[in-house]
Length: 134
Image 1 (cartoon, rainbow, N blue to C red):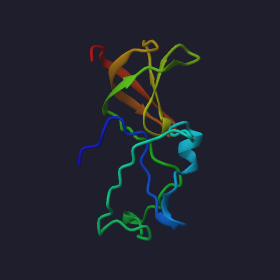
Image 2: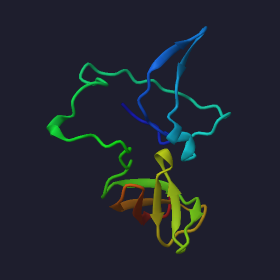
Image 3: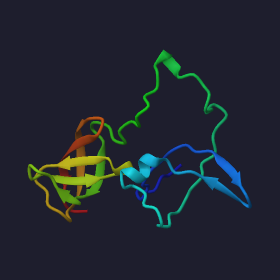
């Protein structure tokens, strides 16, 4: 399955009947992080759950799942990003899924660059520019 680069957020939700329509709720964190804004229109894709995916299954390996969403990037991953802001220390800031921040030193607002993720934390990552021309 191919996932669009325009993906803003990804979450599991139940579909429920409400009067003469069906409703899918957006998690509060998606609005609070600025990924989704009330009153805006978005395209919604529904992906069917496979038989092995259930909401009541036990995690494998005995590990307890985190209540917090995991970072949407991994160390060594290549990403195309647009610098949206400049941080307090002068580094470029890009935002990806769920408003997750990637700090990119040596960039300016409006630059579109290819970065390699060099460090991943729970609420931000650091990326190094590998290509400035995309």
